Length: 205
Image 1 (cartoon, one colour):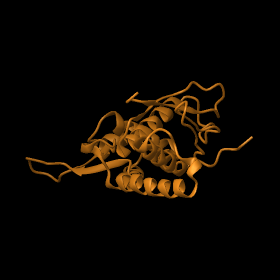
Image 2 (cartoon, helix red, strand yellow; image 1 turned 120 degrees about the vertical axis):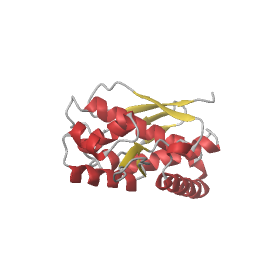
Image 3 (tube, one colour; image 1 turned 90 degrees about the vertical axis):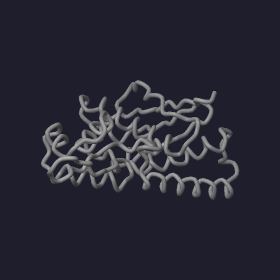
């Protein structure tokens, strides 16, 4: 049986997951709000946010003030929508498509029947998942991504629901950024903690 690789990337620690959950649930969060909600020190929150910004998962903007005082920095999730798109995420999507095209030219048997846009979406999603410590197995016919064994299988049971919701949202953000018919629908209920299968949906079907 394969063993899970160490988790890395945007959900490598539950503190980072908590921060992502907060900015996904409501945009334009302040450092103070995030510290209060997580119980983390300001410096720790800032470090996590910078890593998430560098990865293309969070956006920062300066508050527009009409009163005196120093403008605050506000943090939101990068959803891939035009109004919440990270330039880093856009670069990742473009790079994934180029690498995917190179692979398909070298190995024509790896080409998908899903169409150009959906294929590029999967290119971006697979690279995101590999960057996050997963070993994705794609089933084009069933539109599933098998992430077993999940590198987060050892997480506390009470943390798993939030972790899975946050990562499903991240996957949807990648698909939205890439543009195309595929969406991340849900994570199937696992029989064992290490099992993880994500169901995609073709919105054009």
